[in-house]
Length: 229
Image 1 (tube, rainbow, N blue to C red):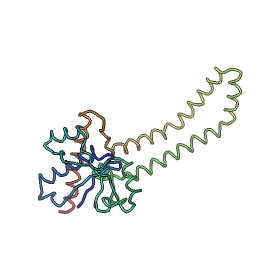
Image 2 (cartoon, rainbow, N blue to C red):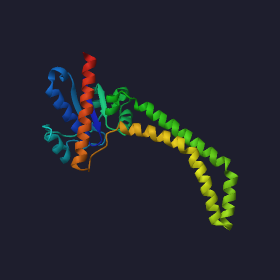
Image 3 (cartoon, rainbow, N blue to C red):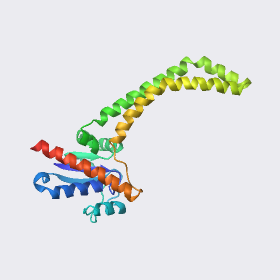
């Protein structure tokens, strides 16, 4: 089983993910020894070291990234991987465009951990945005005459026009509120599947990222080895 972790620059998230995975394999070679890991970035500079904060955080967990060097993701790397785990939906989309053959084996790291389907959530989100736009456009079309009257009124009494327009705006907001609530709920689910980039952040940001990665990777490794038992 060849696993490829992918982020943007391959110096923070995917670098730490690779190091965590290697430490996990080393800790229990009997259980995890059949797993091999690598990492790459969608916008990486080949040969760059891990970021300073990433080095500090992993060292605190007895993990060594000193000799790590980044690499740009390539079609060959994607083809050679059995499982590709990305940090965000943007990474997932980019990899699909780079090598369509890899689409079926590419997942958000937390998507794979939870067994959720980010593509289904994205489809729901697109549907909801479509319904939102239809509602908004229909409302505007149905109130064309009122809007024209308000434009005419504004030339004579701007204050009264603004007052009436505010009432109309509140009516539109009330109409769209259920759609906005539904959109936010699905968007929140998608964001919960992503691992934010700690680059440029504090040591605490990197530590939080490390903790999330470590928990997720352990769960994924256990899932993979459970399947093979």
